[in-house]
Length: 183
Length: 209
Image 1 (cartoon, each protein chain N blue to C red):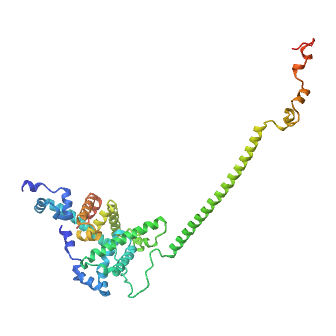
Image 2: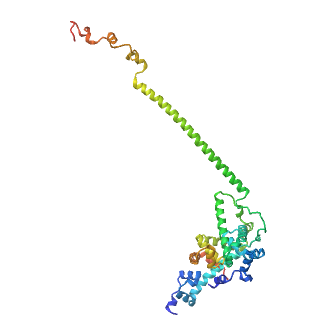
Image 3: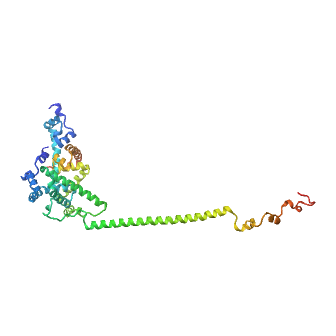
């Protein structure tokens, strides 16, 4: 046996030989023909594969009914797989629920928009009132009962009248002591 | 390769001495009896192919029925009569894919799928563990399921079509509309994982006489 013949097939080559022996390089094909050991390994794997097929066939049941061909000239079309009353009922219910959700959702969104608009209008109206109050306070910050004291509520009382009621200290001689000396 | 070559090199169902191509031609020309004969020839392989993927006899029967009705209606579209087998398997692969798509859709709505309920026969078998064959069968399918879960979707499809449905690489390429080299790549990866799955390999080797 030459040195070349002693170089046995690697596992990859062995698998390749099982897939298709003709795909192996010519030298390996030669070796496979000559080497009993490599041949045995290949046969072992092939036997296991043949056994797999045989066992699968043996353990598979046989069909119990014969294939029935469509009746000649039959115009009745086969119903599609989804045409089943139970499935149709479920599909109908799902569609109805989906429709209710969509409609209810749309109405809810609409109601929400209307409510938001009303709240916004109310808020704007309250803001306007508040601004009126602010303007009034900036004109006259005193409360109403102080207006009389401040004279705000007596527009006819002029400076001369006030001087009459409360004279100026410049003309008050008594308060500066005797002698009629001006302070 | 001898064991696999045997299955691969045989013309489809040649053992029955039936010329599938001529039957396909007759069926395409409107011969219902010829199509009936094709159903007889291919019902079991297609049923098994679907069963391997659904693990339900009832589902497999219903889907097989659908596949043949569809094949009957669209046979006129088949141009290359010699490709009937891959054409039929392609239809089956697509139908199984649709079945799982529908199942996933129904799972979203949590609709109880009455069609996929366990077969009474299977339930009976599970309740009677004394039957050794049923225990072995259950163990086998458990290991196959566990192994197939390690494969990608494409690897699983290629591996099953090759080693369980016994299609050739060329036929698989036609079924999946892929190049032969792409099929070989997926097959190689699937085989690598198969070799690494010690439990399934052990079971298969132990059961060998």
